[in-house]
Image (cartoon, rainbow, N blue to C red; front, side, top):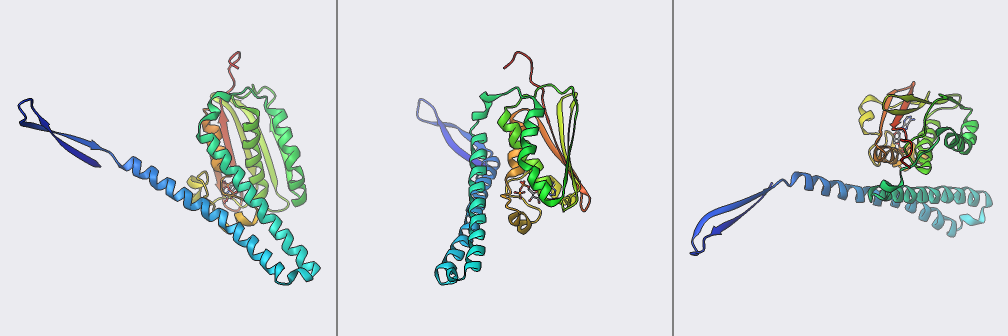
Length: 263
Ligand code: ADP
């Protein structure tokens, strides 16, 4: 708490009382702490790939370049790290756009199936490379979602991409969608590594990862699920996850149906 006091002075210039203002600083301090942590996280996340890129470039310049095989290997690492930097910056921009509220005016009316098909087309090869079966179970009668097409696409991409990333070869990823009382429920279920119970409440936090090294290795930024939650909530929906370590995870989100004539 922050307490300020000032005397109350009468017209005869006599102190007749005192006014106290008490301000609850805990909320402000918490916000400030979150901001500081976020900046520290961002800096760390940006520095890690940069350090690696610099290291490999220096090694190449110091002579490794003479060995074509080594050269190729280092360049491909540099390429991968540069991609991760790019992804990180893209994700940060998405988050900051979501937070500045520009999305409020862009409520959409999006038909689910074509957007899902578009996303599946971009991840099919990732699943195929790992021998993962991608399947869908989409109800026929789902109404358009109250969400812009690009946002729906991003949410689906993040969830399906994760499901493929965290599922070992030979697994299965299933996307389901059906109408429910309070909106359209979409599920992305996998038969992957799962998430320990104590991590479940935290996976939607920015930069939280169950296994940092593994996430990085997979090219993850730790921001994917934070973006998913943000997009869904801005559209009046909610997200959730159930999981059993070693058996798989089921992420879901519920988004209201678009009201006819509103858009
Ligand atoms: P990342 O870029 O690390 O994948 P996300 O925000 O997308 O970041 O996910 C946060 C963390 O949640 C991941 O690092 C991973 O530990 C866990 N996670 C997300 N999706 C899954 C999944 N389908 N199966 C198991 N773990 C998952």
